[in-house]
Image (cartoon, rainbow, N blue to C red; front, side, top):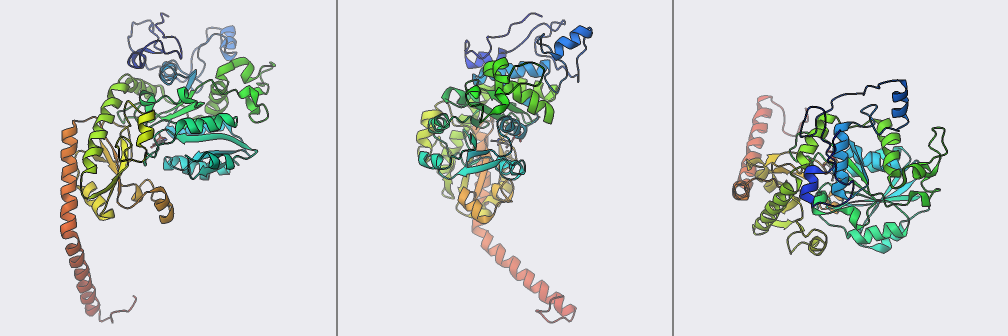
Length: 473
Ligand SMILES: Cc1ncc(COP(=O)(O)O)c(C=O)c1O
């Protein structure tokens, strides 16, 4: 096979070159230029000895697609190069990526720390599902307070988890502060970088140990498929802490004396997580969806640049509207996270953010029902623009007190700004705001009329049934 593979994990080319070429393998026997979809469950062995060699992992090839697959491998190498990691594992969704990464590190009896401002699905996974495995999460109230991080450390604390651009509030973390804290305590720092993508920020260059993504979002970019990504930075010294992370230093159970650390070195975490967690629990990615992800990756920088530019223009426009109380976009100088945005995100600040209507849920409803270009959807990072009301959808299970604490008010609307013409998007927002103004002008009157109508109807109904008002049928 002719190979034009770029040096693995080394930044010899610019981002835009790596996103098109890193990891590619040319030479399928037919001259296909782009990576084919190897839609096969398993792979044929030429002979008895060939089968044995493949199971021993000696010839670098494939056995069964639950472990790895040639299409998926190209995507894994490309993502490892883009994130500056040493290895990557593709799985079926972002949730699967978080689960596999954390279960690669943690076991029953362990405790880990996480920031409060996270995607709600991740929080419930940690709080409700992980607790059933005997793994305890503790959320840090103020991620900027190093003393609070330190005060929450226990003898069984084993990891730190955060998001680069937290969904949906965009209340940025001070990355270096948390990475420094994790390093100081010998803890792997796992970061969900879904909303940033390696184009805007490379967490491994700033001291993270492992990066996870929901590749269903910007990395795939077209909203066609789900996917998840785990990138191993190769820098965390698992072998230094055999008591804390015994799985990497203990014998592999294949008849040899090897451990994951001694056999795989910097790739100990990914080798273990691929074969012992991902392949056994089984949330693998179909080669078909891996192909869609690869198609998306090839235009990542172009899309994310445009997403961010559109988002900044829209956030700036929204901030000028009198009906808007606040806009949670760190690219705005008025935003509390702006200084962190300037420091960590000079190329753009992403395109998923919330804004809050002064008129509460009535304004949010009028706006969401009126827009036509923005799709009413629970999804982010798609080329199409999307809108959602978190308090009644993604965060509806939370108590009112928790919603208030997390800033998920009734007037909060979340946008995921796409790559359409920004003028068309603003025109659509104007349509939404016209509806908000009309609702504000007529809403109370309509509400009164509706109330009176109901009163009349009920009285008439009771009279016709000869029932005294106040009677409970
Ligand atoms: C930051 C973040 N992480 C993880 C996920 C879960 O990803 P998936 O839907 O691919 O499982 C999401 C989904 O919205 C997300 O926003």
